[in-house]
Amino acid sequence: MNTTEKKRIYVDSEITKLERLIIHSPDSGLGKVVPSKAQDWLFEDIIHLDTMRKKEYDYYVKLLLYFLDPEKIQNKAAAIKADTKRGFFKPSSPDYFNSDKVIEFETLLADVLKMPEVKPQLVAAVSAIEECSYVEMKKFMDYETTELSKILITGMTNEGEMFFPPIPNLIFTRDIGIVINDHILLNKPAKAARSRESLLAKYIFFNHPFFEDLRGKIIEIEEDEDHFLLPEDEQSTRVDTLEGGDVMMVGPDHLLIGLSERTSVEAARQVINKLFEKDIVKKVSLVKIPAKRDYMHIDTIFTQIKRNVWVLLGSLGRTNEFANKELVWDELGQRITHEEILIKQFYKEEGVVKHRSFENLESLLKHVSEVDLKCKEPVEFIYSGNNAFPYGAREQWTDSCNLLVIQEGVAVGYDRNDKTMEAFQEKGFEIYRVEDILELFESGRKVPSEMKNTVIMLPSAELSRARGGSHCMSMPILRKPFFEN
Image (cartoon, rainbow, N blue to C red; front, side, top):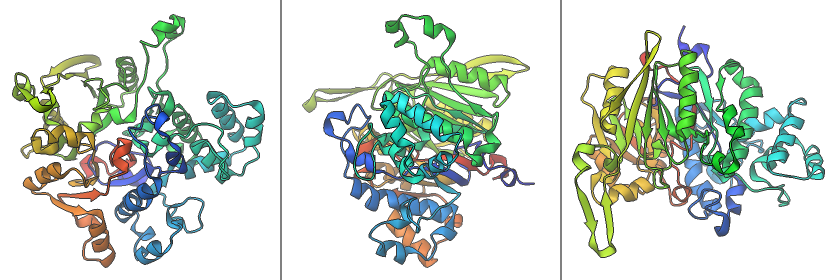
């Protein structure tokens, strides 16, 4: 029997056919982010919600449906366009697409809130971390399920009463957790702004019947007992934090973890111990990148497109080319230099954990392609901004390296990264605007499953302000197993 026929949850690579994922469409909370709180809530700027929804994210949802659940979208283009209230995209609407392949986080939360034994626990937990009064907590219990799920996400009622801050980063569902073969690793966020979404996710994965296959297979990050004995000022410098954008399942037995401003070495050590103890993977590679807002997570500096093709930021790729080279932009007094990264791989051999180092990022990625994925073709790298100064850094900032692969060689990116798209074209990829490809799908002139070597570009004026690309906006929970591909 095919593995995917037996499992609802399974991911062993970044590039095989995507069959199920969790998303979260931009909610009203994003429209409540004010300039004075934007950076506290991990946004670089405020966004225009209507534009983000109608002219950007809705295209992303339609594209995912054509690839993953075409029956929900085929022949509905005219009706969707005519519905000015966007009922197709709203979980509370009778016209909602309601797919079990493209799954909305809000619907999962609403389902869990219908469970009488879970609802009071969840309401109490959220009230505690948001420091709501006892009176407010009791008030939450009276809301019907659909509205309560919105309140717990946006912080406000349909009438506009605000109980607590929004969690605008929930559109980046990748950071909730990562599926590792048939297990799931849940995150432990580094920033307080993401604590509530992490809590909501735990209640969903531990209680929703859709995830019953995960019972006993959920891995959490815990503070060790010594942490509680440290003085408060020392506790803040020694934390166990991990976010999904720093974790990639790149092969059936190989996990990558980025050590970044959001993911700590203490958390990585804990993950390695738990994975090896349960024999879930054979290798874990740690990639330490500069702890800068520019990079945030490893999926902002590289993602895989095909078994032999990667897109990455050149200045973090090859030490031999950049180490002794300085570029100076005299007019601005800005000095651009190579930044060092450190790569250590831990692997289990005959019951013993060993380790080795990689000189640079490209050598690690070649190792993944050639050793883990048994790739015989030459490994190729596509560089952000086509590796031309200053476009590499500019386009990396707007998610040129943060692409979601829907099926091998077919990826979703942002339309604003022109030089990176040129680099893809030079490697033989076709580039389509999402509006054009959707029209071809609707007319039957192109079939999603038959596409190869293609990047589909989403409009991104507002989405890019939120500092995350299509890879960030997805949490794959089922892909076709790599060696069945």
